[in-house]
Amino acid sequence: MFIDTQYRTDEPETMDDFAMEGEILRDALDKIAQINQLLGGNKLTLRGVQSLIRDISKSNEIRIVDVGCGNGDMLRTLADFGLKNNLKFQLIGIDANNFTINHAQKLSKKYSNISFQCEDIFDKPFIELKYDIILCTLTLHHFKDDEIIYLLNIFDTNSNVGIVINDLQRSAVAYRLFQALCFVFRLNDMSREDGLISILRGFKKQELVNFSQKLNFSNYKIHWKWAFRYQWIIPKI
Image (cartoon, rainbow, N blue to C red; front, top):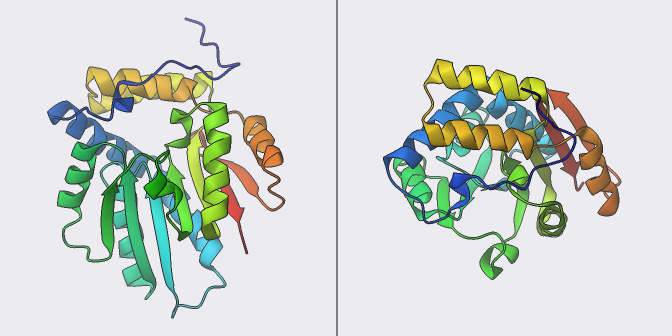
C-alpha cells in the first residue's frame, strides 16, 4: 500500500482525548517510553539540553519544563544525568491528562526535584509559566501548523536559555518501521493506530525551517537523527 507523506495529516489520535484513562492508556505511555529509550530518543533530547547548558555554571539552578511529559521518563533521565554530573535541575512535567500525570508521579516518587502539573498548554497558567529550558519530545506533531507557531512563540518568550524539540520525520520508511515495531513490542490497537497517525502528523525538515523563519529564529539547528527524528535546538543565549 502506498503511503502519502507529502502533507501533514489532520487525523486525530485517540490519546488526544485528555479525559482518557485506564490500563490501555497506562500501557501505551509505558510502551512509548520503552520504544523511545530503545531508539535513542531520550539521548537525543538529553544532548540538546547539554548543548544549551554547556556554558552555564554548575552552581546555577536550571529550571526545565517538559511539555507532554507522558510517564515522566525523560525527566527521570534528566534527573539521573544531573545527579551524576552535579547539576542543579528543577524539573517540571506538563500534561493535560490527569491520569497521565498521576502515573508519572507514581513512577517518579524517588526524585525530589521532579514535579508534575496537569495543565492545558493553551491555558493561562502555562502561558505565564517561566523556565530556562523547555522540552517538547514527540509532542509538537499533535498540533496544527497555526497552533505550532503560537506555542513556539510562547516557548521563545518564556524561556531564558532555549528550546529543545525532538519529533518525528514524516516518511514512508518510518511508517513501515513502526509497523514492524508494533509486532515486536506487541502494541495494543490504540498504540499501533496512534503511532502510525503520529508519523503522518510528523514533519519534513523544510517545514521546521519555515516555522523558524516565520518566528524570526536567527540561531537554530535542525538535525536528522536516527530513528527518523529531527532534533531542533533553539538557543536564547
